[in-house]
Image (cartoon, rainbow over all chains, first blue to last red; front, side, top):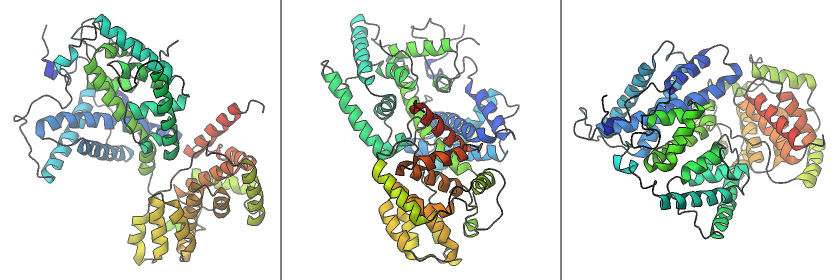
Length: 252
Length: 276
């Protein structure tokens, strides 16, 4: 059996990912005359899919070709994704019959070329052969981090207790307030971003009011249990994500 | 398809999420078993949890951009159409909704004074916090106006009013747009944005009065849908639920995005009023 070097693991495919084929389906439906009233929903799905993939490839190539800021990556990912969706609408980008690996490769090339253009325009150093920097992607996992102490019984118990109590406190909020709280605390989204989130849809001012009240409630609730919400141990995000956004496993 | 994880039984060092799997997880493309396995692993692997948390954050931000993206990807209307008040009805949504509105005579010919009186009374009785259907911002075209100065020079107040609107300074936008002397070509345009600004400022009765004559106009999109929705929300928030519901019934017959919003509103409304 061949061992995959740890630094390559994040970009080597053990099996074919499913998002490229889903993207192909979405684009085909979008280009179909039957798209009709589903058009906006399809564009929305294509937007989040392509942008996520584009960001992923940009981060990867940034580690090879030159450093860029997170804002550069965000801007470039938005711009390239928008251009591609425009091409889908104009039928200039047709994924019909394309293999998953072709779709991945195409998006990766678009990201790389866009990144190189940005770096050249900004007169920043471009390592075109990718040899001057680590091959490791920007956010490639560090093997040491995976060697966690989470399996130690005392740590696991403490974590479980904290997460359970935090879940109980958050459960005191209504569903929309829970989402707003989660999007601010874990995703660090601005009021404006939260306000336009499809699961929230509030005016930004109302988001601030809701957030302030929610934060106070959670803080008070946690304080009554002798805990501080900011002392979140590993695993908290996952538990709250499941409960608040995925609506799974609410505490009894 | 078998789970796309490395072997290791789920808790070992060889069992981790990567970027592709994050994408599949977020897109709901994993089987329930894979999803549970991934989530269980995240709870005990800080690196994987950190990776997924970063991707969830990106993901939710992208979702917040969907409305803007879908709006921007719509075929761009020709702004010069705004000045043509009697153009033929376009095919599709716009024509359909306006035909229905005309046929049903949604009482837009009712005198503004009588309507305003009824609305003011209703506002005094029912005005509450801004809940229910939400207002939309109209597109920022203040930059475009400056480029169009050669064709039909807009007044300084008009341009400044549009710029204030684009910065969400609705009080200033209202003051400037109300004062602005505009050529006939820009009258409809000014009224569309003035009505929207009034609604955003919570002056729903005045927004209704300004927008009412426009709801049966043939306006290019997204302004046509924007006027209808703003008018509907203003009615709703002013307390005139009967007229708001009546308009929502009409809008809900359309298969487009605006129709879907109206249907959502009606479904929620019915559910929240069990006594009906």
